Image 1 (cartoon, rainbow, N blue to C red):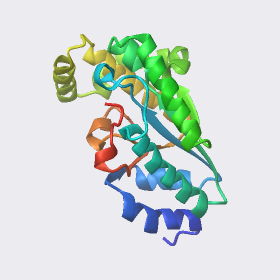
Image 2 (cartoon, rainbow, N blue to C red):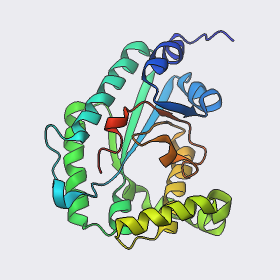
Image 3 (cartoon, rainbow, N blue to C red):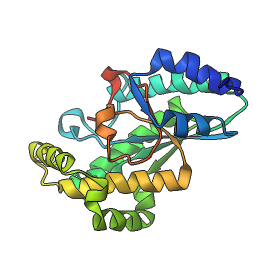
Length: 229
């Protein structure tokens, strides 16, 4: 079928083929229909800096985070230029509770890191909105309960096994099951409240299953993924 929306046609035929790094999820029934709307919501979660002991809390010029934000800035510029008839709302979500509650990072480390990230985003991408996952904590509880009650409806045993191995390797005493509950609860809440297109900063396999039904695209170069690690 011929695409009537010129902005969506550009995205699908010119932008995506040049930038895509992995197959998108729900392209036909999620990404494209949402891009055809006059208001487009984009969503990018951002993890805490787990290596803060060696890297510090502040994000500095030349850090991987700055390179990744600069890349996403170029993406935003392309979208604003070629989809000028749309309203773009891009939310970056700092995963603070994953650092403090789930992985035992000091609160001052997590808050300091996200304060620095917020400053860089304000400097390089002032059009976006930065929020913290803790702002949704109360709302997220019903989704957590839902996932806990039907855990193996959302998560398969193999993913739980792999996540347990990762948690053990990290050595922070985190509960792998609760991490998976949190990821799915986040995906369910974000999908229900915002109906976004997720622009992920991690490899596709990191989102599989835990992102539930979120439409998402993978355009961040391999060398810039998970810049917070």
